[in-house]
Image 1 (cartoon, rainbow, N blue to C red):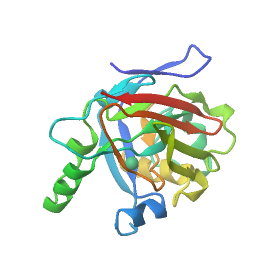
Image 2: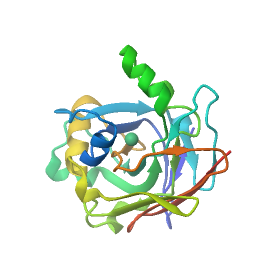
Image 3: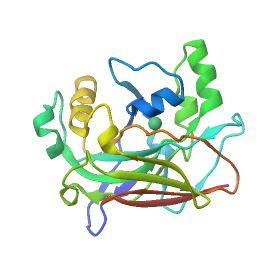
Length: 218
Ligand code: MG
């Protein structure tokens, strides 16, 4: 069982599913040469992909191109289905800094064959995540600066205001497909600047009002 915590509280959550949103920032869609989707691109990562703050990323030997994707993570706090955007924020227990690590070479092979992406997105350690900050402490999740440094150099920078779908819209849309349950985590997509990480790299992600995450690559 994989647990996550809310900072400065006794609250812990057993993680259920981790749902990722692809192509939610226009500048990132453009850098990968993808089409702008009319529906969000949705995929899942297993709970076994989680890596706590301070952990070590292990890139699988079947890839030679692992990319970082810095993302705002949402922690679901109660059960909901067909959630209305107007009340969507009331379903959240917290926010965290996460990385949606992606084996870009493997993902491209899978895409070209029309196959699912899980082996590129769901490997062990592919979801580094910080402690969660209580949802009540973040008044507007749609206006937060994000930044990722690798070995002290800025690689990704953006603001959640650049998301094509707001946090409320993401929750509403995902809940039309899946019942959201306490302990589920949603990854909201990445801004531009994704690039390769290699052995020995030190990664530091920060999101305004949410916190920071530090991990290294084995
Ligand atoms: Mg992503």
